[in-house]
Length: 286
Image 1 (cartoon, rainbow, N blue to C red):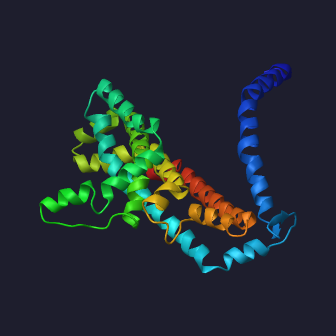
Image 2 (cartoon, one colour; image 1 turned 180 degrees about the horizontal axis):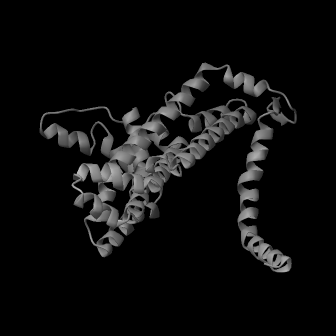
Image 3 (cartoon, rainbow, N blue to C red; image 1 turned 90 degrees about the vertical axis):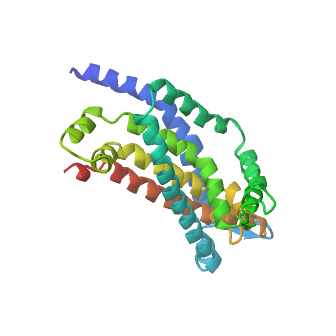
């Protein structure tokens, strides 16, 4: 290819990439850089002053409540990811292999509908359902069970996380499983593989990328969620998003809140890049 044609092609590709690059710089890279810089500022007389000192980092890392919140958030997000992935897979498997394409499209549309409403409204609906005098305890009371405390617990937080993430995980898994080569499944069955072996050795490895991406989305949304742990989990001990709010209310300590936010971003990036590397690894096919 002549150099002039190649240069023209590069300009053409750059033209289409430029809006994405500008968007990322304005709404991701720029705020992230500012937040990192703000973590080194100091608060004096309830006003932030520019500085480059590690006092905020030393202060937050030296507090037990920060690490309690960090590991609690990590634990809850990991539990949410495991539960959502396990609950979503049977539903996605049925949608991908057991129903027609028309039925699948309608069910996916029904899974999208909850996102048309406010997540806060959906969370408050669970507040009514899980209350000690709510729907679940009233039903259990009919058979002589309960009442059980489900609000202001980790169980309540996980229910909120499922409300946020489960429909999305089902959709992502369904699209991934629906694209699995059916010839591979038929070949495995013809060779005498049981249904369980087909799922474990053919379907899951073939749909590995989509399954991992669904899990990553679930982890990211759960890790950064404020609503569920605050309204359904009781916020004691607080998760990292709640800790950010509490820190900003304590003497306008925005720089210390920035430390928490940066730690969240670093954690999410490590998880995301590790998951991407795992998703596109070819070891499973050797």
